Amino acid sequence: MGAATLFFFLSRSQVAPAYRTALTITGLVTLIACYHYFRIFNSWEAAYSVTGDVVKPTGVAFNDAYRYVDWLLTVPLLLVELILVMRLSPEETASKATKLGILAALMVALGYPGEISSTLSGRWIWWVLAMIPFLIIVYDLFIGLRNSIGSQPPAARGLVSAARWVTVISWSFYPIVYIFPMFGLTGGTATVSVQVGYTIADIVAKAAFGVLIFLIAARKSAAEAGVKDVKPAYA
Amino acid sequence: MGAATLFFFLSRSQVAPAYRTALTITGLVTLIACYHYFRIFNSWEAAYSVTGDVVKPTGVAFNDAYRYVDWLLTVPLLLVELILVMRLSPEETASKATKLGILAALMVALGYPGEISSTLSGRWIWWVLAMIPFLIIVYDLFIGLRNSIGSQPPAARGLVSAARWVTVISWSFYPIVYIFPMFGLTGGTATVSVQVGYTIADIVAKAAFGVLIFLIAARKSAAEAGVKDVKPAYA
Image (cartoon, rainbow over the protein chains, first blue to last red):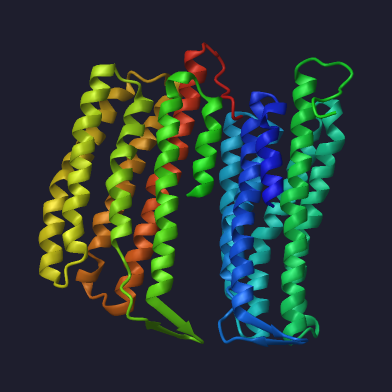
């Protein structure tokens, strides 16, 4: 996440000014994630002790709130970076960013009570509630991006379509990982599976997705500068 | 706060040179806040221990001074960033920044003795004293900004008006949070409510307000560059 942050910040100079804020936000997402993964790392180390092959809880609770505070900040920003790289009108940019940002924050806030619930039924109830804004966002993005593909420069169309699929697939990891404990995973296996699952989803949804945003910004910059044979500045 | 700082520093290149100092100051405000929130975090961790569901004071006092030292530096700077983005004459900029800066420092200094007072009557007395510079500043800003709206480019007027309201509303959080303990909140509930209240107020008054300053600077830069269809560099 830290390396991705530096890549996005340093790459701002490779794209046209119109796309620099998209890359700034992309870097902020991985920076915020980098910070919270340090906190998660420290909390995990404090919560479990390893002696030889034996892993034991120390009595200090592992704090899952770091992940949710991270998502509360980064998920709305992920949507903003995608909207900015589409380069819609200022009005559309503002209205889409506000609507999707609020839905994303609501989704994360509804997921947290279930994550820390001690019962599986509590976990299910909050999962269902969080799925409502989740499905609205994914539908809105999937359809919204499809409609805007036609207005993108031909060289960027394939990438915008890829961004659409990466969003839908990587975002779907989260609700699937969330319900791991409901499918017979218990104890340490459930705890570790959920943490590993969320981490993989975060790397795809934030760092890998960010690279796509950079590629789209670079292709569109080249296309808008009137470069015929689109060979962007990074290649 | 750290992410906001990087956003403001990186966004300097997106606005005209006349507005870059405003963004520099905006980033300094969130940077100073970021530093003090680390201090507050560490002081909080040292002051309370958590075992299972039980939270106990460790005997080490939580140090509220970090917040007041932060405000002593950031509140005058917040006023300076707002004055700079208005782009008044050099004389008006200097006189307004000096007057409002001194009043802001006085307001924070008068609030601190009440915050650490062990009696509610002590808290009330210093609250009343701090409210005097507070009301002068809010009045001055609210009226001062209203008069200058007419001289702003049309594309920025709505945002300047929004900045006016965000200032008044977010600043009003602080004296309301301050008197939480006077309305029947006691013990841990009072302590936590005051800290959460100040934190939310800080995020709105520093980070969210800073984004408004950036948007005003970007719109005014585009308008002054003679861009007819104002489509700022971030969109």
